[in-house]
Image (tube, rainbow, N blue to C red; front, side, top):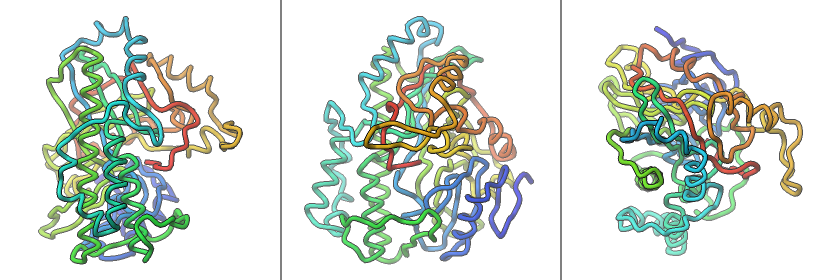
Length: 409
């Protein structure tokens, strides 16, 4: 057994005191079946990132978080990386020019999608009013296919054993998801959906809604809609990169890691909230990204006792060892300058270049030094998953430096 139990929380990897304290608070609040921490855990808002909480009949908007349905998609292309690498600089320029990165950015090309005919948009008329509905739907329409900032990316990978070129991305439901989360947190506190919420405390107990109540049902429907929206966005971005490459995909993996699922565990119906954690049921595939100078992997859940004990959950990435402020310094938004960071741009650029990566955008808060090594956290879960494909980044594209990122992870 690779996990330990601390104050009722099942913990994989080296316990982080701040994240563990948050997980214990979650474990002691509401109708909790089990609380867990994956090996990449670190502090988040209310529920830690890398935290998993299974509830009986309850759902937590703060547990799912502000970036509803953040997740990953990876595809294997029909190209060999060796045929692309001589032109990698030009290709990354094209990707950076084709895909919109950054907070609040709209897609240059408005994307029509059947998603916008979904009946669940009516939730926003009930939860708010027609103005709320129209505002969120327009925001979602404008931002479909944009990536955002923070740790969200579009990457090109080589699979060393096959030489194949892969594409991967990581982002969620954008401003639409953020406004959905803040809206339901407002409603839970008795405020109007679009009210300006007071700043929540990082370590406050989770906000819980009963699934049998109207508010809980509306949130669940809205969350699933945001999930379908995130899938549509990641699909669109992959297709745009395939066009840039003149390539086709012959294999894909796609999953959320900020979401709530209705699942049966130990013969009990539960709502499992994974915040920065990847579903890993037996046979289920997942794409787990490392830092910009580290491997990423395609994994498959094992049919093992330990995987069952993990509520079929695993890591979503390498996990931070430095906060954004520790790594990049404190930002003065008036002067757009940072001070006090532990990582310099020169250090980051050298590390990325040494790894053989063509980088576009990014700041030192996303440097390799801010993250654990992915293999370390995968090793902590070796009894729960098989690694099918190891991918090495050759091109990384993110939002530029000094982008304000309200969405965190």
